[in-house]
Image (cartoon, rainbow, N blue to C red):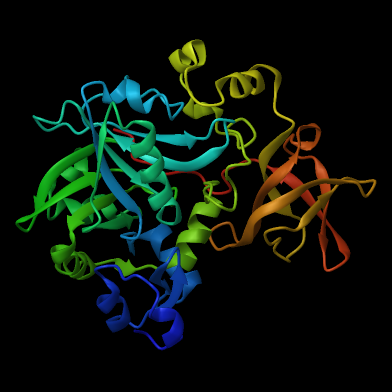
Length: 380
């Protein structure tokens, strides 16, 4: 274990298959979602962030949950738990959606894939957040126990290769990777190792997530890191990258108290699902789509140099509390402080002048358009 994690804490933490490699690369390790994870490497968070935007960064996201859901009517079954159009998924297509509770609150956000390979016609592949995976999988298995079977892949590792040179790098090992469309999936092999590729990620950049058997994860990671322009990237830069991209962090920007409309995530609910309903909390969610939500997630741009951290109070010009910051920090690519949070809908218009209460002081801010840095996903 790395000395940066106290022994008493480290004993209770889980390890990813790449932990030894992280330590060998000089990573600072910290507890995250029950795992011992790299927060940064010797390059440092700022340079790791900028390197990912400029070339390619390799992230260990093996702590996330991977599983298959199978059943004769698996599409219809999962649609009783999520608002996304699962029936409309084409073979090899990936979709971002939300696992909802009975009140329409967000239990988790997740990726759902319809595998393209033969024999998987009644199968969906799920990737969920690390801190939520045990609860997510228990919830899905219990709710769908008579309609579908959930199989966890706890021994599978997951790597994320992100950045403008990610496609060229991965294509040197798997040529078809270069022509994969954004939000699609395929199975292939990486130097003889069976892998499942997803052209997706959580940085706002082009890139891939690569599911690989745990026993082969270190060799795959080393092969990618040996390529020109690829650096290991930790959780610190992953957080600043997704914040600049306006992407939610579960537990900070969305949780069970948040409805999709409040989180500015109505786009995940397609036309058919809006017309048919049939997902948890549909009446409340559809009402917010039609009539608006009482609060809304927005970008927040501090007008000074000081960053706005989570839980910072947001006030209007008369000193009334109208919201709260949920994520904030310095945006290295934006070259300034960036934040997201919730404000009363009357104050959600881009350009609205507000105030942040930091250590008792009122600091000027304004509502900003998301994302702060344009997405650069691959367009086929």
